[in-house]
Length: 123
Length: 123
DNA sequence: GGGACTGTGTAGTAAACACTACACATCAAG
DNA sequence: CTTGATGTGTAGTGTTTACTACACAGTCCC
Image (tube, rainbow over all chains, first blue to last red; front, side, top):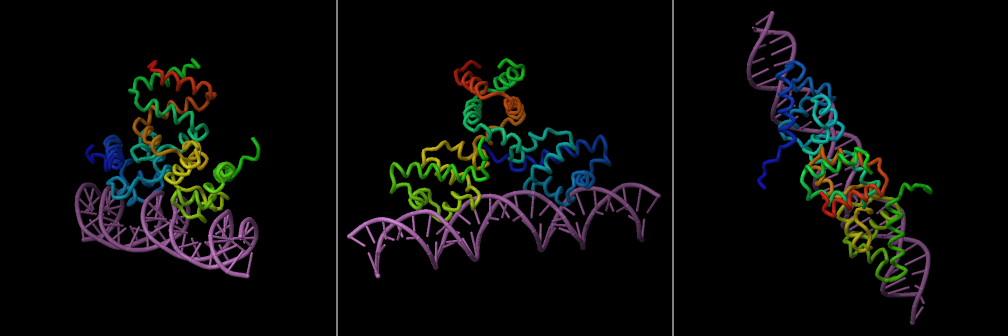
């Protein structure tokens, strides 16, 4: 694998913001977004360029909310896993460890199918 | 549940070691275990009494190996989730986030059944 | 009663994490 | 031409994580 994903989170974030800026220019300047999220503009700037590593989960969640992105995807790009998902695993470590390692090999549609069947109360 | 302990990891670890010590006293002194795991005895002592927070994943894995414990369980007691499981989730965040949050409500036997069916190649 | 063990107390450290504060250069608009 | 906004550079801070180093007291053995 090439080192293509060095700034995966950074790039995704900047692209997402500039995309929103096309629609609503004034509301999605770096400074405005930083202000709504509650961080320093210079910090967001560095994050968007990958100068700084991705921020903490809280900031990522607020960014996702403002940008209409999926928090879990953004967290993943930041190399993190949502704290609530971790808690779910920790509650039954063996069960979920086994299941996840099994599903690792499976294609998307298989995982999706499992999820759907579970949701549809077939268990 | 009895007094759900603040020092769940600590107590579990100490109990596990002292249990092994009944069988093979010399091999499971605090110092011997610390030596095999590659940490300072005083550090292990503090960990076993909950004076210090649980160690990193590497140390926990080596402790589990020496004590014949399940690494995922030990990690869970330490408030952590195995790095490899996190990587599995990060590879397909939406899929696994949805599945896990769905399975959270389900009883053990249901999760187990899903895992078994997946393993048995019904997908 | 000196050695060789136990476990423990005190102190400190090095790196990573998650940010803030403020000054600066640039550019568009009035 | 200066005002007000944009993004960015430099510097620094408090906290957490993950440990090490070494000295110490008690116990068992002869």
